[in-house]
Image 1 (tube, each protein chain N blue to C red):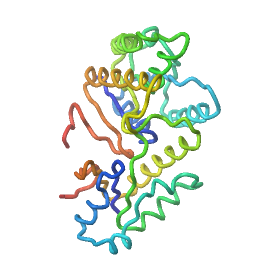
Image 2: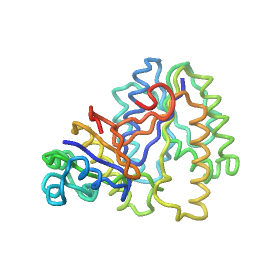
Image 3: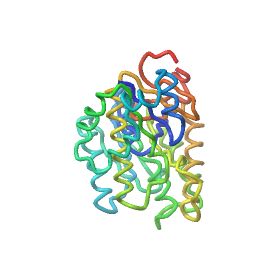
Length: 176
Length: 112
């Protein structure tokens, strides 16, 4: 089963995604962390998420670029967070896939899906703040949007999280 | 308490007034709006949420759906606004999201 969880900043998407993994029941639980600790703000965010996961027994696997290189030791449940970081890393980091970002992520997701029972991918809604973006930001938005649509098309279930409340857009529970 | 959210100018207050049969004055008395602006710089969001929950209706604009702002202050403000909205939604008996003037019930048993 694959689930896409999408939401804006501080919408409660991480907490909801973790709950999904716990409910699925598969073990072990892997957390694929995509945020590079650039500065104190990133480190604080990473710490907050680590604390949220501490009691939930996730094993953290760091992956900043090249998702398709990830090898999981056992078949279990996987939470990948957050696609918005992975997409940015693929586009802009020297080791990233650059123009091949979408395809690289598509292959990575496909491969990851084959290695686990339950896959939950968290991504970010960054498209409701106007159209006044150009250059690199615009390029990033276009790539992330394409990735989000690709994920939604692969996923069995798609949730948008609004102030902590899940709204189902695809799969069981839609329209409820 | 009913928590009403939705994008900027989506018709949140207009919806509340029609739904509750309130005029502007009754709205001012029983509801509080633009609470997302109170979150920035607030040291205790939990307490703020509790305080706001005394009102019958609490309204917040959704502000976390754009590109992550370049300024740290703006990032912190929208982060706080999002957390506050989650806390209010948790406390609320019902959560309604208004989109283009159209209300959708996200939580609670309400017939619109």
